[in-house]
Image (tube, rainbow, N blue to C red; front, side, top):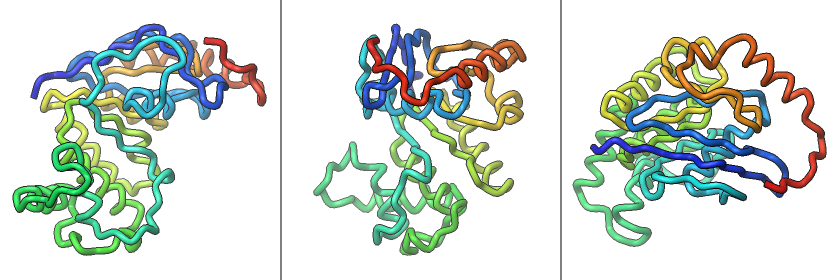
Length: 242
């Protein structure tokens, strides 16, 4: 797989014309493993949606991401009540290959079964999604990413509310993707995990605070600056003028 690079040039993104991410420039290097951290409301999820092409920038540019990205959204943003079997959810990962109405070939069904096995859900193909625990559901979404086979993987709080075993097994999968040369970007809150397992970090508080090697980014002064910026945010901020 060819390593993928994403470049941001003075990127500004808003939500309903309210500030989300301001004037962010930099690059996710090919094959890099980067954590995105910051206070609640700092624009982390909005940034991932913009990288995935789901949120249009107000200003600036995103280069190198088009058609190469697989996104794992926050689990709380997904409706688990819809009557689908686990294999059907995983097969959505083949959408780019098969389209909406083509019959899934036997090879695709075999890939879905293999993906379920890889995340510890062997035998779950016909299980209703609504019957899964939170950890099983997150494993299912990782299986879908396996089928997407994208060079850029975006993860929004992938280990939130998971038991230690599930989190460790899914983190091992993330490291495997990194070892394969994929570019991985993950929104995370656990700074101990970030320091231990993520070589690069982007710290934002709507405005960029620091971006680079994790040890240089997660310094006490940088974290204090991010917290002070968050405390200064107005409940009703001015409309974003980019």
